[in-house]
Length: 436
Ligand code: ASP
Image 1 (spheres, rainbow, N blue to C red):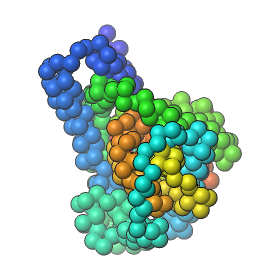
Image 2 (image 1 turned 135 degrees about the vertical axis):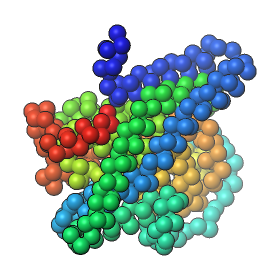
Image 3 (image 1 turned 180 degrees about the horizontal axis):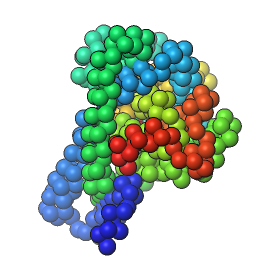
Image 4 (image 1 turned 45 degrees about the vertical axis):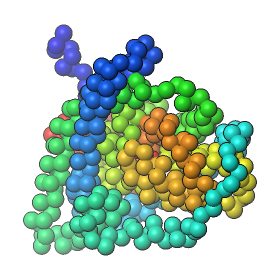
């Protein structure tokens, strides 16, 4: 019996933790009356502690892991032009998929009218923040003024840019900077090892997160916002199960069902933890199993977890339509185009941690003068949507990585199709890491 349990892989344990947590939460919510033990001891202390501790441990890993893996990834691509091509393609696909995601959300919002009939106050508070300012700020903020400061405060885009520069320079100077190169390579190994240790707690962490969420989720709170929730879920489903698979087929001819079968555990993990950042190690691991070279994924996945948030963009697009309809504000075509632009910028500015999408939503609302108070209305139910959208966010990163590595000839299609084991070097590395 114990032997059998030992054979269960970590990704299956995560799934088991998620399902048990979900069931525990639902049972507590609907069948166990409120009491000091249930509300305070169990939900607010034990589950809260278990879940938050796990998320904190994962977040502890993010800055050093992303920093080292990007330095090492960029340094290992010896040809600077190759970094340019990979980078250009990756960022291009990230931006296009996000713009597409917001557009889908806006169309759904126009068709289903999630905010119609809510009749919130008609006094729209317009904002003096212009699109120009927010976009300029977003671009300026990408360059670190003080890299140490960015590292310390976990500002991911400046961190990524600084790490990329170091990696490119290491590749250029080769032997001259061998010691520093080795330092980062070993730093990367240490962070991967630390990740694999923290990941062992994932099933318990995921259990606590799910149990707490569902124990406290009042169904009554969901009902008035039912249409809004449904619109976001439809948008997410279209993006995940129509847009992404079509892209995979059109650009790579790979089988999407095969992809989802392998990738589902990463989606579950992102779902339970609501953080793309914490999902980075798992995502890297699964993509390697699919035949993607770490050379590409170690760059595209951390970058995607930071700037590519298609799920978040969908929530923001629907939220815009919801607020506009609820406040009786008519958004014209130019306002909708502004929303697409700012939502793409907001996606870049959204950190891959829980609930940040709501914070950057203010930027989108401001750009078209929607009252930010409306965000307060959807605040209460956002956690559940955050789970779904994070699963879509990480799927977008993986699909884009598959496409880029396919175009770049760093994807082993035979490995993806299960005709061959993954590359020896990568396998040795992954076996060492034993993340999953
Ligand atoms: N939780 C999301 C993520 O980590 C970000 C958000 O939309 O709040 O990908």
